[in-house]
Image (cartoon, rainbow, N blue to C red; front, top):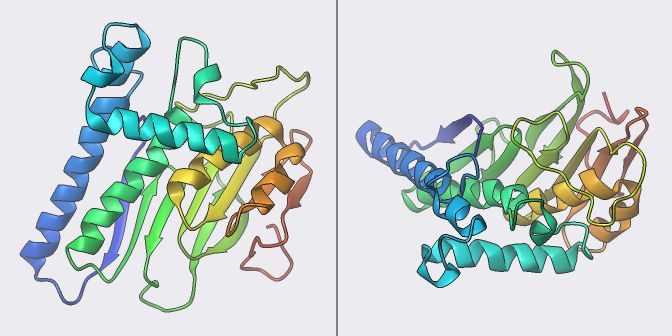
Length: 245
């Protein structure tokens, strides 16, 4: 899925060997998902499905699961996320990374990890509280300055950021609107799978999608426009009371 994944865990109840085994299993889960869904790997089931070489019923069961989630996300986003509108055939890239990171987090939780953050290129799934207490604080990359943050958000479960600057991210406007796309779109919520898809939708539709995100229980969005303007739904929690950095 074209990104680096890091784990931040607190597991005082686990032995060192048990924690190492859990991390190895979570890593194996991520590698399995990458081998299944990568559109950059010609022999992945997803690539073969896109070329018409593999029927959906013959693909791994996870493929149908993810495509069903894409359809559901498309409905919730009112069509702004559309995995079936991508050039070259269906492409779940805008959702599957969040789904895969959540699966990796579930491995750690099931192993007994009490607190964890799984970070895949700025898409983050969290469990429990950080060791120091309070909410998780996540820096949102500045879209034009690699050495700076646009904002720091307080997050409970999940945060996903989408933008044209991301390696491997495919953004496609299903209605072909004129003008440049937003520079950065971030969505927070209880599920990284849906947050990932909604961030993709906001990165395509900009301000037009903010109210849609806000109407979905538990989800909020923070947007940086192509002109540098910033907007957010009412539930976004900035760690600095003054708002964006």
